[in-house]
Amino acid sequence: MSARPGFASPFHRPRCLAAAAPSGRAKPTHPGKAVVAGGVAGGIEICVTYPTEYVKTQLQLAEKANPPKFRGVTDCVKQTVNSHGVRGLYRGLSSLLYGSIPKAAVRFGMFEFLSNKMRDENGKLDSTKGFFCGLGAGVAEAVLVVCPMETIKVKFIHDQTSANPKYKGFFHGVREIIRVQGIKGTYQGLTATVLKQGSNQAIRFFVMTLLKNWYTGGDPSIYINPLIIGTFGVLAGAASVFGNTPIDVIKTRMQGLEAHKYKSTWDCTVKIMKHEGPKAFYKGTVPRLGRVCLDVALVFIIYEEVVKVLNIFWKTD
Image (spheres, rainbow, N blue to C red):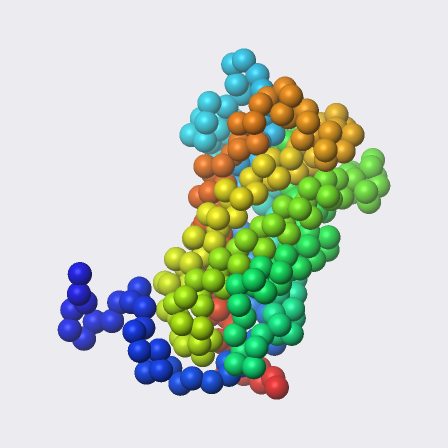
């Protein structure tokens, strides 16, 4: 279908790349700007998508039972709202919000730091290098932010399902976890978290880099409409969900209140397979798919737009 005269669809790929934007070296994003833009993007995104994260975590924590605790996404939402009201879908948000801002900041800061060293003379980053830059960004955010943040979040959500919840809020919960288990209590499932975040960001940045290079024909100076960025983000998010949900399930189990049942990440994997079967590794896929696709799309759109604003008044070499 052809576009109306005078109407340029944002989904139209430029045919004449030379005419679309002046060719030449694209100025790389300063890591400092990436940290600020990533933090803003991460904070906004989690406030929008958190209920889907809550439902996904509840479904992954539910071990095999007859009858099952939840009959699906809708039933999980219904039971939560009936028991705790709509606010129940936001239990644990504080821990994720406090962590999402530094998480996204570390992710984009590290990605830009690594990618700036790997771009060619024209500023282009190929998809293979994008994969390794994403991997490095994912490992960094896992160790510095995600593991303790996710452990606290999972414990908060799991605590809500207990007969007598013991955590009264974020700071009280953190104090109790550290008092009882020490700092290592906030680092349960570190191996699984590193595997999850590393593969997550490797897949997402690989897909984003691949699609951006396809759309611009390899010219990094060409402008890409935010709607296009969002669409690429949805595809990158979906790819990461199908690629590493099994790791996410293992990580969630390793960080729950029943984590003591597992001797290691491998032991957790074996026990899930033995007692629940291979389908258990894809528990929570539907809510995670919705949450991650929206998450990645929003984060990349907001990130790009915030960087544009920062470029106006924050001048870097």
